[in-house]
Length: 68
Image 1 (tube, one colour):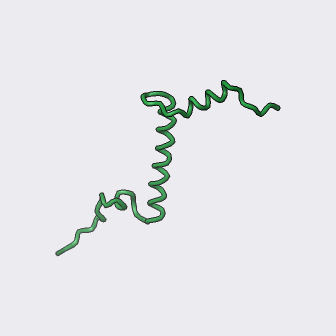
Image 2: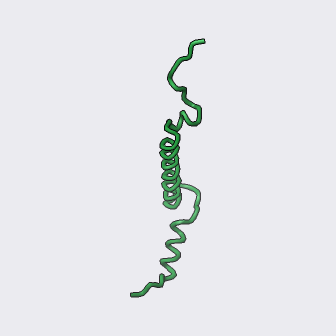
Image 3: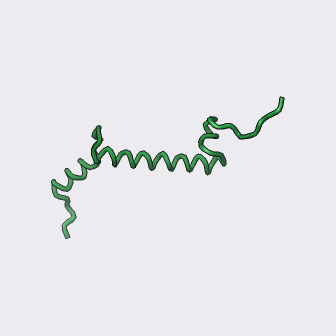
């Protein structure tokens, strides 16, 4: 069994992971990867702080009205 990659396979891998601007398959791969990181970070913030992401950033009130 041959374990060495051919030059064409190595170029395909390098091209697939390249950071190319515009609406390209490479851009969609990076978009998906960064979206997964963002989604995971939002879940982790909610798990460790016991409050929603918008509450954590102070963008949403607690829903209670305080009387003066």
